[in-house]
Length: 231
Image 1 (tube, rainbow, N blue to C red):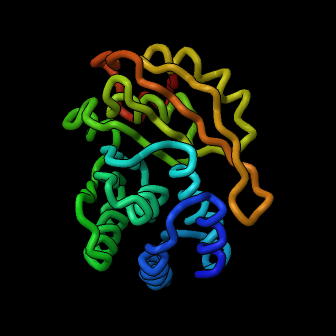
Image 2: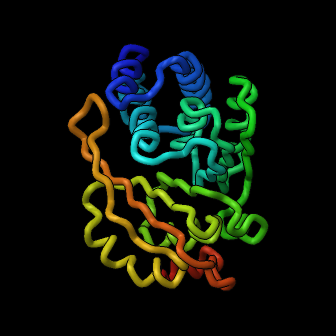
C-alpha cells in the first residue's frame, strides 16, 4: 500500500511525507470495518487507489490551501480526511447523517492528532440552516444525482466559493439535467475536469460548480421533498 501511495502521489506532484498518517488512517478504518460497514473495499491496494489516490486527485485539480472545506456525506471520511492529511492548512468539517460514522471519524482525528477538523452529526439540509454560506469549498463523493447534491451543498458555500462533486465520467446527461437546479441555487456549472485515478485505467470526473450569487433562503428543502421532487 505504501509503495502505491508513494508512486501515485508523486505522479500527482503531491507531497509524500504524510503517507504514514494515511497508512494509520487505513489501519483504523480496516479494523473498525470488521464490526461496522464503512467500506466495501477491503484490499489495501485497492483502497490505496480507489479511496486515497482518488481523493488526492482533488488537490491536483483544485487549490484548497488554507480553505474552509465541508465534506458532505463523508461516510468513512472520503475525500475529506485524505485532503486534510495531505494539505494540513485546510480547515475541515466532516458532515454525515449517521452518528456511528461520525464517532469513528472523531476517533481517527484524535488518533492522528489532526487539528482544525470538526466532525458533525447532522443532515445536510439541517446543517445548512446553522452554517449557511460559511465555507469556501464543499466537496462530496456521495452517490446522488447532481440536482440533489447541488441543493444540499451549494447553500453551504460562500459567494465565489465552489462545490466540487466527484463523479464517474458517464454524467453528460446528468449535467445537462442539472442546469436549471444550478441556476436556481445561485451556481454556475464550469467545464468538468476528467482524470484517471493514478496507477489505474479508471476514468473519473470532477464536476465544478461556482457560487455566483446567494442561494434563495427556501433552499435546501427537507430531504424528502428534494428526493421526491428534484429541482
